Structure formats: structure tokens, C-alpha cells
Image 1 (tube, helix red, strand yellow):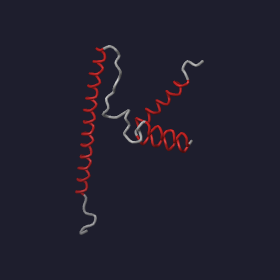
Image 2 (cartoon, helix red, strand yellow):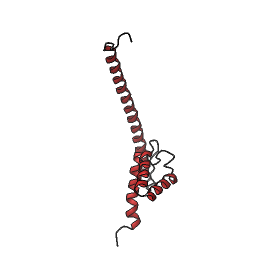
Image 3 (cartoon, helix red, strand yellow):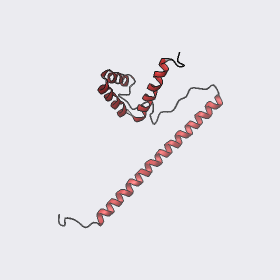
Image 4 (spheres, one colour):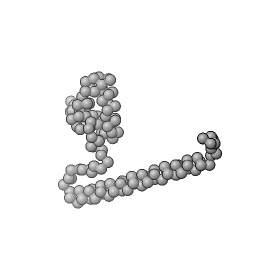
Length: 131
């Protein structure tokens, strides 16, 4: 007899596939559904039903939402639970600050590229004088 029941051997890869698709967003789910219809139409239909039932079709991925807080059940050790909660809050704040920093960095790079473009454009003589 196998060490794991059949349901856990099948459920593990399905959960990993679901999480992988969730990380890539709604378009990945739609692509998987279309591929399912192409390969074997009941598979595509099953994916469509799952997407509607789990509300993945009509909303952003709720499992990996940027603003969702990670929730872990209590371990029974209140000191550890408090430490974990404090650490998660600190990491979320650091992540938010880092994402803001990256956004400002992208904006600065875009501005520098645009300024360089405008400068090079102004330096070129008019190709069509009098136009």
C-alpha cells in the first residue's frame, strides 16, 4: 500500500499548479483554460467552472493579492505568535518602502531618458526647413 493516499498524491500537484497560475495572474488562468479546451474540452470546461466557482474569473488573484495580509493560524505559543506578527508587519512595511523606492527609481530613469531624447532632438538640425 502506498505511503500517501491517492487524494494527497493528486492534490499536491494540483495545489502547486493553482499557486503557480495565481502568481502569474488572471491571464495565465485564461491561457490554461483555453489550452484545456484545445487539448481536451472537458478539462477546459472544468477549469472554467473552477475559475467561476473560486471567483478567479471576476476578480484579481485573491491568493496573492499585493495588499492582502498573510494569515497563519496560532501555534499555541503566544510569544512566538506575537513575534511572528511583528516580524510580518515589519517585512510588509519594508516591502512597501522598497516598492515605492523602485517606482521612484523607474520614474527618475524615465525622466532622464526623456530629457536625453528632448536634448538630442533639439540638437538635430531641421530635416525639413520651412515645413
